[in-house]
Length: 345
Image (cartoon, rainbow, N blue to C red; front, side, top):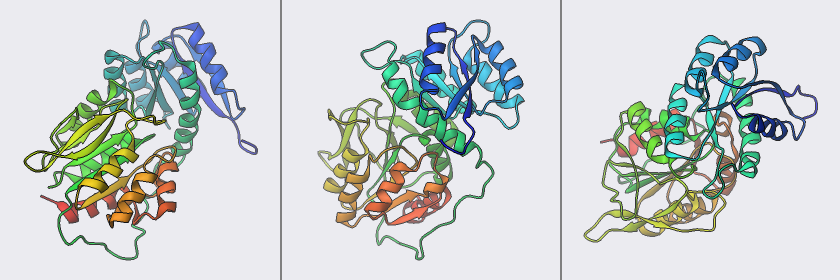
C-alpha cells in the first residue's frame, strides 16, 4: 500500500502458535504491522491504551479476562475506538460469544476453523486481511453524513411485492441491524442470505430479533415464508425459494459448489423464477455473489436496491450489481424508506 502508513494491529490470543500465525498472516503483504501481542484480555486492554492500534484481532476464550469483557472495555475506554475483529472457534459456544461481541460493538469476525479442520489457517488467511483493511478504512469515515438517495425518480410498485430477498457479506451484521430496525414490519416475507459459517446464523437471528424488534428466525428445509416474517438462511448452506402446496412459498435447502454460503445468487435466481413480484436488495460485502441472481431479477422487471458503495464496509457486491444494472443506489435509510413505502403493514 504505497504512500500510506501500515495499519497498526494488536493481536490477542492465549496460544503462542496462533499469535505467531496471525502475525505472519497480517504482515504478509506489507500494508499492515502487528504492533503488539496480548495473551489475555487484561493485557489486551492495557496494550490498547498504550498503543492505540487501528484494529484488534480478539480471541474469545482466554484466561484472566475473556474476549467479551476485553472488547467491551476497549470500546468504552479508548477514543477513537479501534475496529475489533473476533477470531472465533467454529462451535456453537464460539458462535454465541461472537454474536454477543458484535452486539457489544465488535465490527466483524473470522472463524478459526472450518467444517473439517480445527484450525484452518488458510481460511483465516483468506478472510482476515481484507476485513482488517476494510474496517480500518471505515473507521476513518465514522461520523460522515449518510449518502443521499441517488435516484432521480421515485419508483413505485403497482402492487405490494410478494417477497424481499436481501444479500449481504462483510459488514452485513451491522447493515442488516440498521435496515431492519428502520424498516419494521412489512407485509411480504423477507429472506436474507448473509455469508456466515454453520452455527452462527441461529445466534445472529436471535441477535437481530433483540436489536431490531423484528421476529427473525433461522430457516430450515421446507420452512414456511409467511407474510410478515424475516428469515435468515442457515449458515454454511444454500437455499432457494419454492412454491408451497396450498399457496405461498417455502425454503428448500440445496447443495451448491459455490465459493460462499449461503449463496445470494441461488436465492435471487429462485425468487425471480417462482415469485411474481420480488424485490432484491444488495448490501455491503466482498466479491460478486448476487450479481448473477440480480440479473435474473432485472430480466423479470423486478427492482434491485443497492447500498451506496460509499457507505459500505466493502463495496464489492454492490459495485458488481450496479455494473449489472441496479435499479437504485441508496443509503440504508433510503432502502428502508423505499421498502416501507411499497410494503408497510
